[in-house]
Structure formats: structure tokens, C-alpha cells
Image (cartoon, rainbow, N blue to C red; front, top):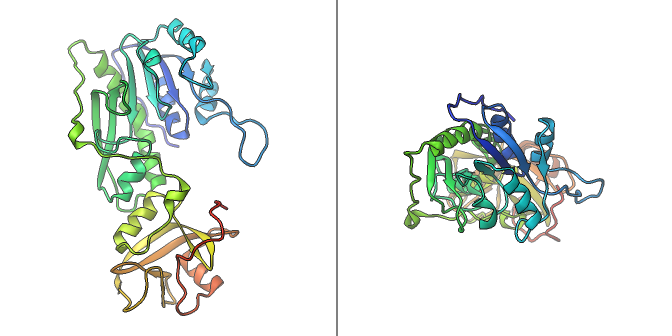
Length: 333
């Protein structure tokens, strides 16, 4: 993942960084290479993979150890006197939080300047765990980064800084996730400099403009072909590749990770949603008002393939369609 070089700062602070996934690693690396001191890193405990094997550290723990940092891996944040004592003893100026658990007041109020969360949306829009997913699903052409001071309610704290990030029509969750992760480190540094200014006062959010961005689970990723093709396309790109939009074909699950709007494929008269539109050159699927081309698929038990390979390999018959009920809802890929 690309790391944007940090800008020069005129303020040196003692920080504690909190985060878990790969998304947070570029910000941690950026802070480490800045004038600030990262006194410790807090992340989740090591986990055992679903298919067995030894314990795996979180991506943030791996990044922290690579830089020789002290790492704390508490199993719980609430009612944890030992953790509170350890963090209080670090005498941090600020806790910097990126993609981490909800902090209780007993922890987020410890630093001299409070705790700052770096969130991947232009708050108050897309409050919640999946702002990048939902911005794409909803067809937004712009999103952004927000830093805010933590309080008792998730993603509602007063704003420190915001910056806009354009969304390209070709963006998927994967590409936008990587770009925003790279931008978050320098953005965090600019936020810290602003927070350290004695004349600066964080700005309250406008709660009336808030929109939700709840976590997206694999069960939420089922495609409804009854929607217009542009909406189905945005749904697919917003979930590609995590958790991956899916449908079914011949009662088996198929992940659909890529699609392309087409202007020369009008609605097939009488074809139900999900029907495969006859076309030897492309895999076209009927939606509400027109067809959508599918460009990347992972059928259950098979490797990923493009649309033409799907047509050649499975040879859909006239009248066959996506959308039948699968035998189970387990994610095979």
C-alpha cells in the first residue's frame, strides 16, 4: 500500500496510535516518520484464522513491531483498569484513532488534547463502520476525510479538519480504500497541527445532515437485479472485493466483482430481472431498465474469470438467469 510522505510539522507531540486493519497502517507509518513521538500502539489481540493454524497479529501490530514500537493488545477496552493505568502512564498529548473499536470515556479523555479519530467520509455524512462502501454504493462522485474529537457518541464529535477526495467512475472499494488509506497519514498530521493551535476551536457537526454507513456483511451483499442497471453497477463496485457482491446461478453462489454499464443494450422485452441476455461477446444480465455487463466473476468452487470465460465455460441456455436461491449461504471464496 502506498504511503504519502508526511509534511513538515512545527509542533512535536507525544502520541498513542490506535487501529487494527491494513487501512490504518499508512497513517501509523506516516506518524512514525514525522517529528512526533509514537509512545505506544494499541490494537486488537492476535487472532486464529477461520481455517485453523497459529495466531496471527493484526496488520497494525505487524507495522508497529516493524518500527520497534511498544504494542498493547487488550482483549477489552471497557472496565480494564490495567489498560487505563498503562495509557495514563504514557502521558500522551493525543490519542490518534484510525479504524479501531469504540473508546470509552475513561480512555479517550486521558490525553492532554483529547483523542482524534480519522474517519473516511465528509462527516456528518456516512457515520458508521463502512463509509467507503456506502459512498460507492450510493453513486457519490466525491467523498473525503474528517478528523474529529472523540465523545460518547460514535462519529459525532466536533470537527478538527476536513478534506475532499474525488471518486473516479472506475473506482471500486479496493481502489478507493487504498487511496484514502494513503492520504490519511498526511491528513492526520495536518489535523494534529491544527489541534495544537491554542486559537483553534473544533467545529460542531450538523446532526440534521447525518447519514448512516453501517457495517456491510456478506449476507447484505446479495444483488437485487430488479434495480436499474446503474444502481446494480454501483452496488457491485461498492462491495468489490470486500465482502464481494454475489448472486446465484444454477443454485450455486457466484461472486460478482466487476461490471460495466452498457449503452447499447436496452431492456429485453419480457425478460425477468437476472436473465442472461443473448450476446456472444459479453455477459449481459437484465436489470430493471437495461442490461449490465459482468466483467469479473468467481463461481463457487472455481477460480475468478471474466464474463466471456463464464459464457464459454458454463454455456448458459436460453431462459437461464442469475438469482435462484442457493443451497446454502456460506461464503466459499
